Figure: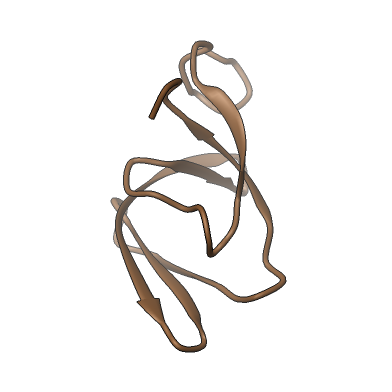
Length: 72
């Protein structure tokens, strides 16, 4: 496990944008890894529903660093 984020070392680092985000991606907010369980696309952006109950909105210029299983 990665000590800093609590994620498996085999996960690859990816850029998360409203165009390429996927269910099962992990985003780290405030040092806490959060799994994306639903992606809802709207005319103004993309809403990410997180496993922990939170929501994140990605707009045109939002770019996050996230983690994904290799090959997915």
